[in-house]
Image (cartoon, rainbow, N blue to C red; front, side):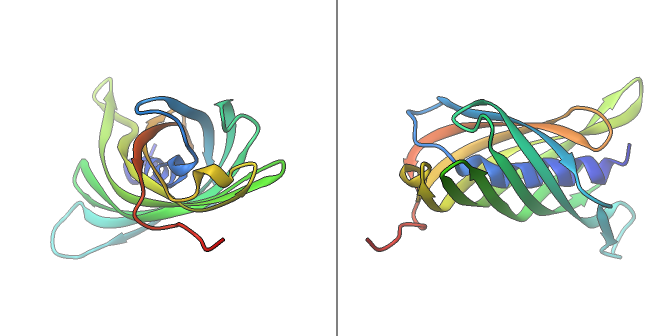
Length: 174
């Protein structure tokens, strides 16, 4: 499995974390995600192993507030060898009667090794729900934390927990 692919997937997943409105460290949801299409990998050119990875993914909510939700997202991350930093990401969460738009605000990742070979990437970071409506309206402007772990080729899990602090953007006029 390509290391950059897994990292990109993890980063994208991070953007999804924003759909929460619970107390500090309370789990908002667990999603199972799949990469959609090919991961774009662009070498930066200054040294070997330094590049950008962009991935698109789709997730299904399996537990918590996001159970049954469909999340479509993307992320872009910078990789220097086995260490990554997420530069941008986010997407749209769709549930019956509600929508939410997420934004990844920060994240880091690393390559996971198994039997001396790269087996994927794991990542974690913070995000924000920039907009939410309907059944998800209470999440608008909320901050969250996310953690992504590889779950096989082109797949990863995404755990989202409430940060407990309101976000600084994303509130809408009433």
